[in-house]
Length: 94
Image (cartoon, rainbow, N blue to C red; front, side, top):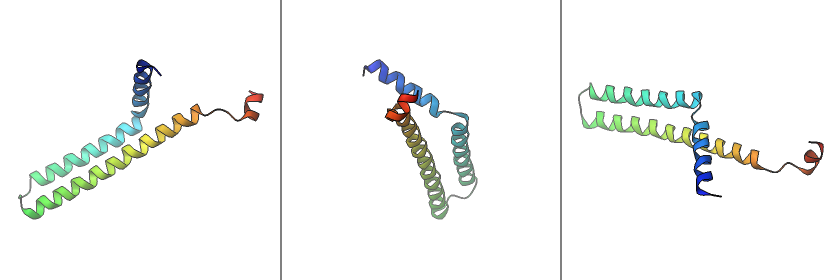
């Protein structure tokens, strides 16, 4: 496959991954990070509050990673299903 074709395919996959539902899910994570930062920055900075802030951010980022992983796998599976050859019985009736 040519480099330009691969690049175009990658761009098409990226655009299809950025559907409104996925974007709204990403925005929800951004708002959660903003809320965590605001909460931390308006309270007294102590070792305990710093630890709590770090754990909160870790949880948010872990959930974001799961969302991105899930979306990526779903996209790959969708592409692979459309590229699979049709069973012989189905091809004869098409």
